[in-house]
Structure formats: C-alpha cells, structure tokens
Image 1: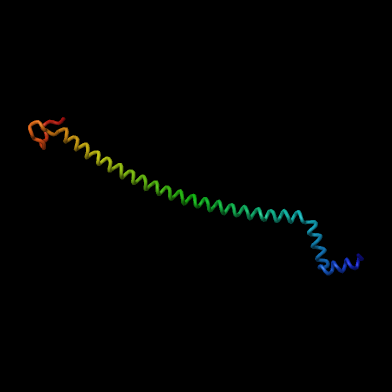
Image 2: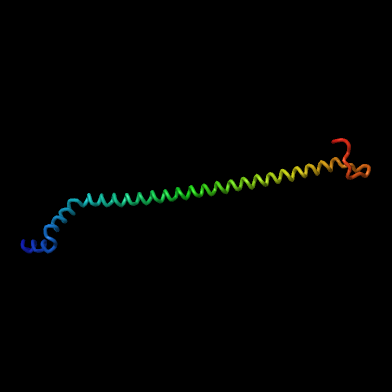
Length: 116
C-alpha cells in the first residue's frame, strides 16, 4: 500500500478525530475498563443496599405483627386462666358443701352447726 492510500483510508474513516480516538483507546483502555467496572460495582452495591433496606423493613413489620399476635395470645391465656380459677373456686365450694352435708338424720340440705 502506498502512503496516499493509507491517508485516504484514514481520512475516509474520520480523519484526525479517528486517529485521536484510536490513540485514546489504546492508551486509556485499562483506565476505561476500571472506570466501567467501578460504575458497575457501585450500581450493584446500591442495589444490594436497597434490597437490604427493604428486607430490614419487612423484618420490622413482621416483628411488629408477631408482637401483636403474642399480646393477643397472652390476653387469651390470661382470660382462660381466670375462667379456670373461677371454675375451681366453684368446684371447691361444691366439695365443701358435700363435706358439710348432714346425711345421718335425713337432713340432706341442712348445714351442720360446726365447721369441719
């Protein structure tokens, strides 16, 4: 190839700007690669941060829901324990009346004069 053909080819490609672009690509390829990699890494980190924030928010919501359910559970358990205590008190009173009943002389509904 002759020099005029090479110059015509370079001119057809873009002239001086094409030469500048080729020189820049050759000299700055590592820097550009690192810059692009840093941009991609920063985007990935931002996506991870957003995902972690979203997961923390969901975890907080679930913790609040679980705390509410536990409060309801404790309230129901306390209510059932109160009912059990009331039933046991009634059973104790009933057993006490059975012990104090006088069946010797035929007075089944009379309370004896003395406490046992």
